[in-house]
Image 1: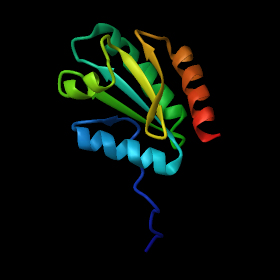
Image 2 (image 1 turned 180 degrees about the horizontal axis):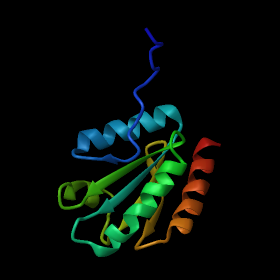
Image 3 (image 1 turned 30 degrees about the horizontal axis):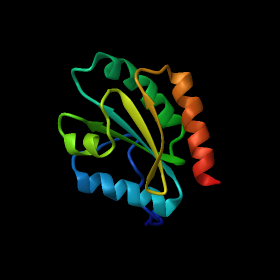
Length: 125
């Protein structure tokens, strides 16, 4: 029998389906001293769909150092309202359970990567 995992490995990107699930990921990240990135999007939003592959590449690069979530604003409008998301795509950065930064509108992969790197560094230090 192989050794037990200390904690269940997170998926690359978590598609949040409830407020409770969102809170669980934010709490877990806070416990582990990791940043959380939340991509607010909708399936009818062309810029959201164009940015999705970039978000996925950045999530892969920072796997294990941060958590990456996706929130469909049509399915969880109350979560979008809580964070005053008026425009999508919006990527929200959280550290210690608090919003620390956001990117609003389409952004290329290199810009997202640079921003994520800064947030991850400041959250860990």
